[in-house]
Length: 70
Image (cartoon, rainbow, N blue to C red):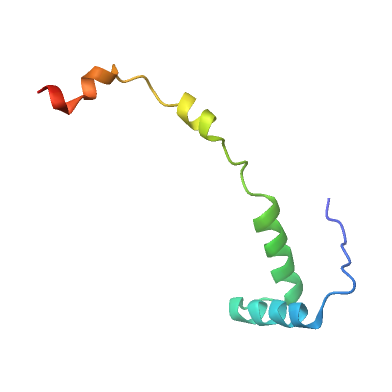
């Protein structure tokens, strides 16, 4: 369900920047505002380094990658 959102007391330079960005993208300031909110708030959760490392497959022993031995 869509919800109305009202933003008050926006600095004039911010509102002008929004209008310029909207014009550059060929849409209304309201549509641009929706797209900015969607882009920022619906990003996938970033994974921690530990999560990334733990998801890597085990491909051998450290000695398998030691180029000094051969």
